[in-house]
Image 1 (tube, rainbow, N blue to C red):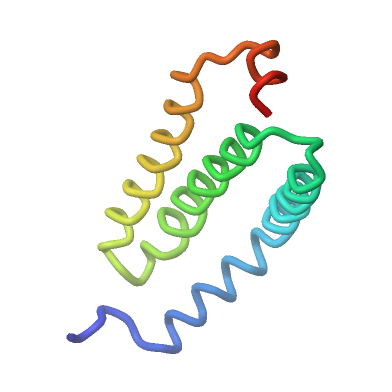
Image 2: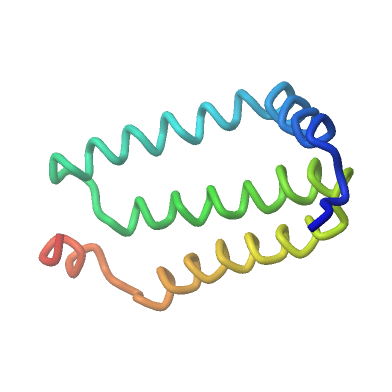
Length: 108
């Protein structure tokens, strides 16, 4: 299978993404790590980590696939859409649970 981009173009996309988005990416991972530690210690709910996962999916769909990867691969629009759908799906799933704080306190 022939890819619509060269290895160098692919690496250049990573370079452009990393040099542009690094502050937000680091912030996302620091927040996710902090909540992961809190979750392991029993101080955070799984719903919080799921919400962060939705943010990661959405960020990747918008910023990496739609903004950067589409420069070298037209199929990246499909990837962007799928990532956005996944982020929306996780968000919708969390909203459909409609758990009150009291319910969450007794189940976590």
